[in-house]
Amino acid sequence: MAMNTGPDRPEPRRGFDGAGATADDARLACGRMLSGVWAAWEDGASDTHMRTCPHCAQAVQQLRALGAAVREAHGEQGQDWDSSPLTERIMDVVRLELRPGRPLPLGEREEDVWIMEAVAAKSLRAAAETLPGVHAGSCRFQPAASDGNGPARGPVQVGLEVVVPLTTSLPHLAEQIRRQVHLAADATLGLPVESIDIRITDLAVPDSTATATAEAESRPDRAQPERDGSMSRPTNREL
Amino acid sequence: MPGDRRPAPASDVECRLEDGLLAVRAAEGDENAFEALVRRHAPALLRLAATMLGNATEAEDAVQDAFVSAWRRLPGFRSHAAFATWMHRIVINRCLNMLRARRLVADLDAVPEPAAPDHVASPARTAESHAAVRELARSLSALSPEQRVCWVLRELEGRSYESIADTVGISPEAARGRVFRARRCLTEAMTAWR
Image (cartoon, rainbow over all chains, first blue to last red; front, side, top):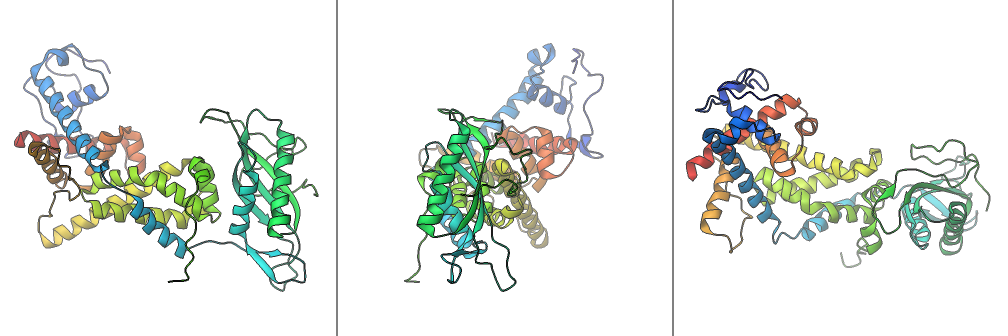
């Protein structure tokens, strides 16, 4: 905004949000409106008048003192304030409202042993993360079609999203992840798996917290990666 | 209960993960991932709520309610990478509601609320500075909830008026006006006690 140097600005700021707002504004002894002086200072748009006028300087000083006081008060709040008890209280409530998901079948078809989705997901994510630099996100399951009598006992399809280091051969790494996940599902959990779909959702730059925005798909034969978080299944590979 | 199994707390692995991955996991029912998010974000949210509410107990209530509400709403939440922004907004709205409820009670009872923050306690501070902080808290209680919230977001977080307007649900001009009036009120109070 162009600043004039006369005693009055051509269009003094007023009426921020309707009637009554101007009642709070004040005209300084030099003729400037207080709201305009503060706005100019905040925007770093001080003009020659403001830099030399004692009234404007005083108005700005008041604002700075106010800012300093609140930052001081805010800073004190951080001291000696242990948020661990609060975290415990929050988690106590959360654990009363767990979302374990659906039961997935463990073992043979004729058995009656189940594992909850959320528990299986934790285990498979951890398996993928045994590989250096791999971080797992979404882990979803597609149970076999039910015959109508409760949850189906057939093998499930797994869809796992991962963030991997930028420097690796992606197809090779995806294969390694698939192997680890299969091992965990099959040997550790005893969860029969029909397919494991690995989706790379991000590439992490090594030695940096920055991540690549580009997304890569672990399989070149996949046409359009879905971005809605749902599992893609058309080209699942049998293990 | 004696036989109660205490689940393992968030591990080191989870502490290294980005918000986005943790939020995805939490949305799929992984409470350990959620705990890592709580540990990461609770301190800053607590301080923000305490400045807005001027009261440590209420600030903890606000942050607890906000996180519990987030846990319930996570399955429908899609912008996982923006978890911090989302949390921030939930806490601010919670504070706004608490301030509004407080004012309603004050109007009904016509009793001035006790304004001194109960959590400011550091022996090293001079009595003078204590007085300034206490006075600031008292002056803050004279502001409307919207003025107070807009001003805290502007002053402490340096947020743009557009961003404040978006969070509080008013126009940018209204946010600018609220901040101005809050500053006017507080600088006048400060001038009075200097």
